[in-house]
Image (cartoon, rainbow, N blue to C red; front, top):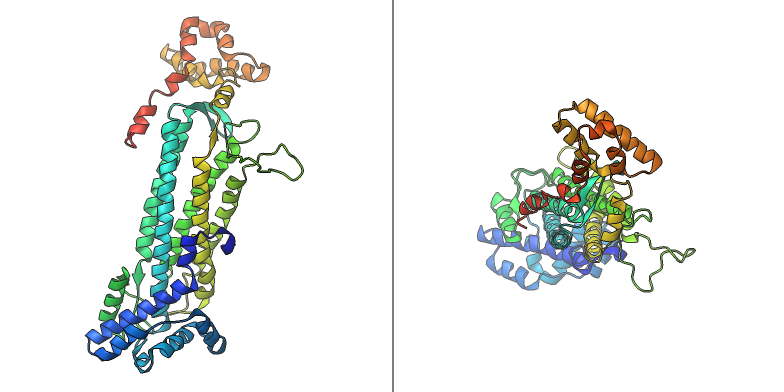
Length: 430
């Protein structure tokens, strides 16, 4: 999955090269702080800065023997540095390096997803502007309700995308924390000043308190946020899938020249991208659940979270990045059919104006119960016999005793339902 769905920018974040680079940065910055405190000779720090390096293949060779990735990495770096390598990792535990570096990677991945969200918002906003007054039927329970515009549907998604942007920013802030506090978080063999220096250099904040690890509620919040964003994309994609149904066909995924929809049926044009997004959202939710299972560790730390995170954190960021990329392209190229929207508006022969007739009768002095009864009996006849609703009303003496034909006719006006569209758009500065 990773190979197929990873965009190059996100692939770089989770590459072995980038991971080891972050590990090395943590170690070098810790040495800087120790040198400032007089615990490392200045010449040793210079040697570390000049010579510290690694080779991914060599680390893997050593790990095959040690069965410990951090020791393998440090051994490899030591081969480059020489004698001064004895000062590297001094007073640190493995998780000081691992958790702090992982926080930087998660921050980098989150920032890439943030850019994708902003691109999606821009595309949705353009569609909202384009279809501001493109009238269509609103549906509740899958059944025709009252008119809306396609632009309002897009604007609704803009607002949700903005909320997701805010959620992601909070999640990035929560995970942008490091810890260099030793084996159980007491700073017994490393001073807090080292942690402050390393975190400052990496653009992180020191954890206010930690154990051997950063607490996994942070990671759970991050992955749950990714899952919520995935839920929104699934919601949007499900709507497009429904609008593309043959019986509705008000919007449709772009179908490229030469594209095929079915191996058996040449006529098929399927919403494959939207369906793919709906499926991938399930992975994000599953990974979020695994992240929540990781919160409860034994005492000051166990290792049960580690193997899980090696899968779920890269996979979730990669998957969501891909989903956003594909859905943004889907919206940009979305085929919208206003003529079909108009056709569907008229399929129920005016039933969508039932509430307006109800309110008009109430304004004439009827009780709501009596007005509802009169309108509903005509509406049910319209459903059963496929007869024009306005005509039924105009031939109902109980109705016309309150509403003359001209007043009934005036109630059947689509513009009435759109009179506050501009008010909604103004809330978005449009």
